[in-house]
Image (cartoon, rainbow, N blue to C red; front, top):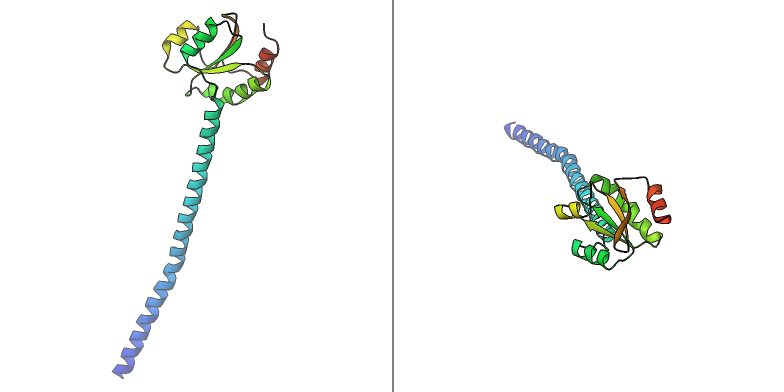
Length: 161
C-alpha cells in the first residue's frame, strides 16, 4: 500500500507542477504581448519624431545668418525677413503656415533665428517673436509683430507698400 500511496503522491505532485506551468503561460504570453506593443509604439513615436524634425529642418532651409541679412539690406534687395526663435511657442504656430505661404505667393522671405542674439533685437528693434519685416531699397518698409491670423500675413504679402 505504501508503494501505491507513493505513486499517488508523485502523480499528484506531477499534476500540481503541470498546473503551475499552465498557470504561468498566460502571464508569459501577456508579457510578450506587452513587450511587442512597447516596441511597436516606440518605433512609431521615433518615426513620428524623425518626420517632425525633418519637416522643421526643411521649413527653415532658407534661413540666413545676421551677417547675410545685413548684406541683403545693404544690397537694397526687396525681401522679407522672418525673425523667430526655436523656443518661441508663437513661432512654432506661425512658421508652418507663414513660410509655405511666402513661397506660394512668390515672396522672397528668409527666416532669421535671433534666439540669444541680443544685438539683432536692438539693431532691428525686435520687441518679440515672431516678427516679419519687409525690406526694400535698404530700409524697413513695414512689419508685423507677434502671432497673427494667417489672413493678416496673406494681406501683408498681397499688398506690400
